[in-house]
Image (cartoon, rainbow, N blue to C red; front, top):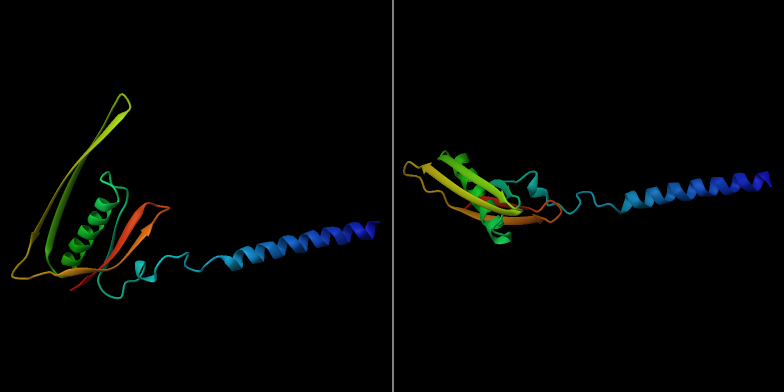
Length: 133
């Protein structure tokens, strides 16, 4: 009887070990995140989180940030100020955002295009890879 119990516990331990190994083997290396997000070949990566205007405004926000970063890399002075006012009255919330962006360009055109984009649904974050055009 004692020999049966030790065989049974060894069997359970082996099954648990195999289930852990199987679970680890099924996880993708990069979890579906594109490589350019961490190391773009050229250009810049920008992102935008939750936006009160919805997904379209979130995309536009990320693209604008990407253009600003690319312009800054090319020697253009970019100054951006955002004022966000949030108000809650009797459980009703309202958000107001004003953003002013100025740039100083000395006879230099900055052309950019979006090469790739990625939406992280878990974080509600929209990423764009912006490259010179």
